[in-house]
Length: 581
Image 1: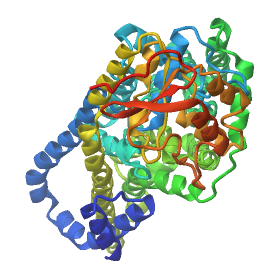
Image 2: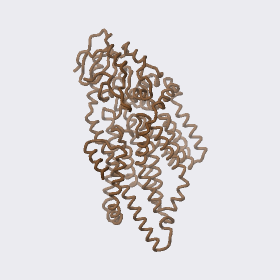
Image 3: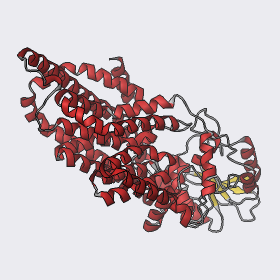
Image 4: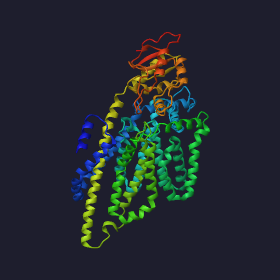
């Protein structure tokens, strides 16, 4: 009960629910729901007639909630996470022909450790739809909607359309149930590579399970190749998919698909001259220098264990109703289960570097969904039930077995209700805050302010600086990059470099300040420049004292706008910019 009181207090105070508290809430609701679940089971035929249409309606509303969020997200001129501004800006730089991965000591500090296709794909949407924050979000939104659609089709194929609606509702909640930071709610459809990784994982799974041999081989190769390019550890959530490919089409298909995937993954480094694999690999090596944050490992495992609850419920149902069928099913799927569990554990460890959160576990959700589908399909089989609790002929034994089955059914029902309620509470704790943040963000006004500054300074280079409190006003920096301004400093990249022990503002960057390669820096209004702290623990200022000293020596605040202070190079020969209305 204490856990539920804490959850209620947190929600009423607009606080996020951490995964540990969500788990405690689940177990509390599970225990509380045992008696009601038994009553519901006893009168299931009567209750089902009333509740099934209502539950189907509620499931539809939950699905529409996710779809609505995904559709609305591009219309909000704000980002859920500062790294989205990084991907957007660097994607446009790539489209303009700039080097994607600069040298380690280059003055430009804008690269993150994402693979080349993160930027190549985004640059395509930016060039096709014209560069804007809206255009940058389209790819992620399409990926999120497509992921849920493919999962719906997988469920419908095995369990029917009603189960597909219920299952899609639960999956959409799993996509949103990232509570370590409010912005993580959008990780299945945001600009960062997570949305694309999720989509290509689902797509690879769908092609292997439903496709012909040629579609399964080439489809899985394309999905794996793109995914490992996006993130080199993506092979961990593709090993179970390749186990399914092995089950269906034998070892030769696996080998052919793997070779093609390797070529697909390497393709961007072969065809684009401004993408250096050597430089990418050098930057990637910096990630291991961040070290493992041991307290994040159990959080990753807890989150994955929580979203795996439907698998546990399906397993319990199969054991209690179709035990003999389960015994025949298990040897055929044991390798899939083993590789899935090992992949989760290994990924939980290597995705626990400083700054990493549970969103790195998201691509395992469709693999868990597939397992739940198979187990529910097994228990929904029309074949006679043998073995398990019903394998004996004695009337007394049969009565004992029925009591046991009634008890286990009550356990399953209580667990299902507790899981649904707890995940709904988890999502609500972040979604309400997230929507309010998006609606109240000054995005459109701030972007219009930036346009006015650029219009008033047509012959000057303008860069986005950082203040002392929040990153929000600095996340609109893609608007400056779209207009052809230089991109010297990116906060997300600087955090990664600092966490790796790398000097995030080397001498070459300081020289860029001294020589005024950027004529004007825009700093959030009323903030001392470059005083922000990194998100990564331990909290420390993102910019060094030497950087701030160099900036102060070469730039003066000469005017102000609605949202920004305008810091102009002291060496400029032009008249200081006047206050811009």
